[in-house]
Amino acid sequence: MNEVALYKRAFSLAILTIICSTLEGSFSVYYGYSSNSLTLFGNGVVSYIEVISGIGIAGMLVRLRKNTEGDATSFERTALRITGIGLYALAYGLVFMSIMNALKHEHPSTTISGIIIAIVTICIIGALTISKMKVGKSLNSPALIADAICTKLCVYMSTAVLVSSLVFEATHFEYADSIGAIVLAYFANKEAGECFKF
Image (cartoon, rainbow, N blue to C red):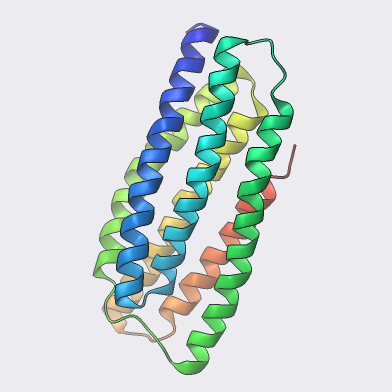
C-alpha cells in the first residue's frame, strides 16, 4: 500500500474512532449516571476526551494528505497534549470520587449496561487498535503510533469496566465499582503520559 493510500486509511480510521468514541461516551455517561456506576461514567468521559484527540489526528491527516512533506509536529503535539491534560484531570477526579463513594458505601443499582457496553467496545475498539497501529508503523508516524497506543489503553479501560461490572453483578460487592474506577484512573493516567512522549 502506497503512502497516499495509507493516509486515506488512517483518516478513515480516525473518523471511525471519533464516531465510535462519541457513541460509547454517550451510552456510558447516560447509563453510568442513571445506574450510579462511577466506572462506567468515567469510561464515558474518557471516550469524549478521545473524541478531541481523534479530531486533532483527523485534522493532522487532512493537512498531511495535501502536503505529505509538511511538518505537522507542533499540531500533533497540541492535539495530544490537550487530550493528556484532560486525562490527567479525569484520573485524579476518579480517584477522589472512588474514595468518597467507598466512604459513603455508595454502589451502582445495576451494572448490566456496563457489561454490554464494555463487551461491544472491546470488540470494536480492539479491531481499530490493530488497524491503527499497522498504519502508524507503515507511515512511521509517532503521532499515529501514540494514538494507536491510546486506543489500546481504551480497550484496557473497557476491560476494567467489564470486570468490575461482572464482579458487582455476580457478588454485589459494594466496593467493586470504586475499585474499578481506580483501575480506570490508572489507565487514564498512563494514557495521558503517552500523549506527552514526543
